[in-house]
Amino acid sequence: MSNYELIKSKLAQSNSYSEYFDQFKKKAESNDFSILSETDKEHFTYIKLNLQRSSRIHKTYKPSDEIKNFISKIIDNQLWILITEEWCGDSAQIVPYIYEISKLNSLIDLKIFKRDSNLDLMELYLTNGTRSIPKLIVFDKTGNELFTWGPRPKEAQELINKLKLEGKTKDEFIEQLHIWYAKDRGKSLEKEMIDRLSNVIY
Picture 1 (cartoon, rainbow, N blue to C red):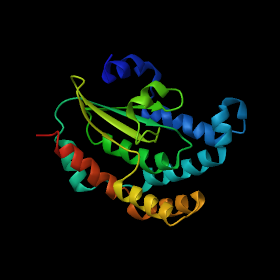
Picture 2: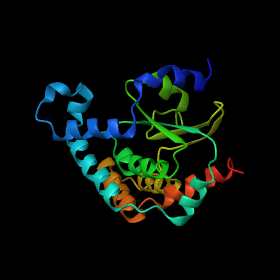
Picture 3: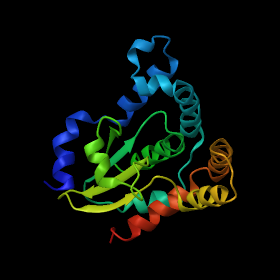
Picture 4: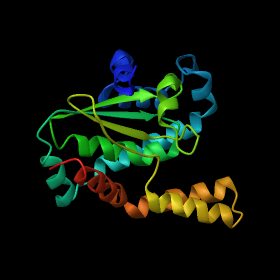
């Protein structure tokens, strides 16, 4: 079974972005822990914080003319598969941008898969042997895989690598990473999406 065939067989387990975000809000705002998985309970503080981060992006992000131009060049249906989790800090800073970009062209069908309940899918898209998220996989209408992206922009990853080499603690480099995201405002993601799209849009 090809990666695309596996994904097609699992589409019923995916969510639209609106469904995903509604679940996100319900978890973050809930006082009823019975609706949360054990993992969600462990990460509840992060889920609440990540909802604030994602909501802020939705309110403030304005796609650049350049990304609008590239997305408008898509003339055939594409399936965008995004593997994520609400508790993931990188996802909170990335997923809203990908959604807003996908909205620029009605030919893009964005589907969200939760990593922890779709490990068979995640295992096909590891990053250096790890289940790093978010992970975006883009297919054309015939099921050809056009490109993948994730889990974070190259510049952000270089920052993490540098801070680790300097011996920073996990809390320290995560703080610096979120400062970087706040300053970048999605521009690095836009650039990297354009780079990938330029290789598959003619």
